[in-house]
Amino acid sequence: VTHRGCAALCLRGGIPAALHVKRPDGSASLYLIAGSTATSNQAIAWAGEVVEITGTVTQRGGWMVLTSEPGRWRRLER
Image (cartoon, rainbow, N blue to C red):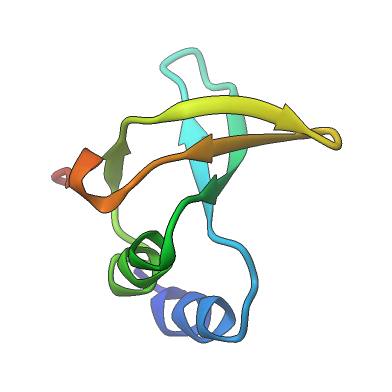
């Protein structure tokens, strides 16, 4: 939540949203989030939150991309 305002500002400026995934084994991955305008708006509203997102993962130009819509997102407890 510390960087929530900064993240929201970057997202409003057109920087793609990303999801940082931490696994129980300590490893982590970064996924770019793609979808509709509603997806971008939800990313701005929920910047810095702990979330669960369901969608389709593809690889584009070396990046893992998660395509999803806000109806497939839910907030989790910290």
